[in-house]
Figure 1 (cartoon, rainbow, N blue to C red):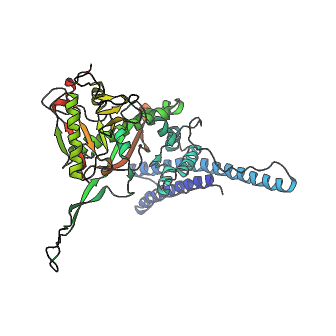
Figure 2 (cartoon, one colour; figure 1 turned 90 degrees about the vertical axis):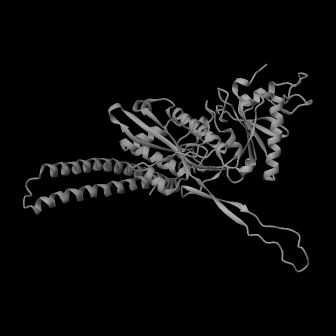
Figure 3 (cartoon, rainbow, N blue to C red; figure 1 turned 45 degrees about the vertical axis):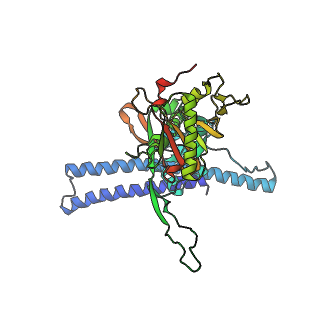
Length: 464
């Protein structure tokens, strides 16, 4: 029996199970009438209930017949191929070809739409669409419980084809430069909280006061940081026509959802409130200290940046490894000059001469240059509207040791999607995408310093 027919047979078994439930319900209605001694007539409610279960049984029978026909076609084709192979062995004929690798079910230019098949299987019980979705589930290696759900009418979710993610993550949104630099770890498969141990009290080592005297002793104390696993999600309403007849509908929908998801996760890593199931951003983490900037002069800001760098090294006992700022702050530094007209940050193509840093205005990777030997990463998600006494808001500058930060996630993209019920009267389908992640800057709050203050206000940036 082929794998394809096995998938459909499982669905047939589920349909038969559902049919038996409706048959039992109809029998119960009949039994109730017989118990009254009046089996020739139902009450109005009994008649409505009986008709409802009867109609659902007819629908299930229709679906079952369709799937059984498909199984027969698949089995007949398999038998024909097997017979042809045996004939070739006896009488000679076309050499059989063994396929060692097969192209993905959903790929660019395949002519089959992932979302279109999802709709066709969920709402029309299209067996061919169900077969493709089942094959895709096996290709992606998702757990069996998810594969079963993906190939039944309940339709709980599927992994989005990777080509949709690869092609459309870098849309016209802010992306996630900071989190890409930090990197991520795999989220544990169960639970909605993570417990991260953190040492509060360490041991003591001092000189022994004299021979045979007691050696200093202090118990080591650890506490757990409890970090929530949060859900970031979005939804999109799509017309039935767009799914049935649209061109590149999958790409457009997944592109927008992926772009929005990555930017929101990156934003929360900086500025999440910790409330309403948001991550607690590093700007709100207890123990992350601030260096106040009141002077808008670029050279003074760069000197305060040096102070923040040494503070991290002094309190964390390990050096910072990145400076993170808004693109407008980096642009301000790169065009600034000293009193003699010399640039404070020189372009990469020119050797530095009395320069604080070296780098270019923009680069694709997010790392645009370095200051004091530390890489500078620009990220549009760095808050640029922090309130203070000057109107218009300020951006902030972050100095941190990224290896002390923790991001746990299922995947860098929202790879689960689900169809919610259609709005039948307007031929509309709701598509929901979501994923789970956990973020913490609380392992070593001393590893981060934030520069903020009125000196970083937007209106105090003067170019030229």
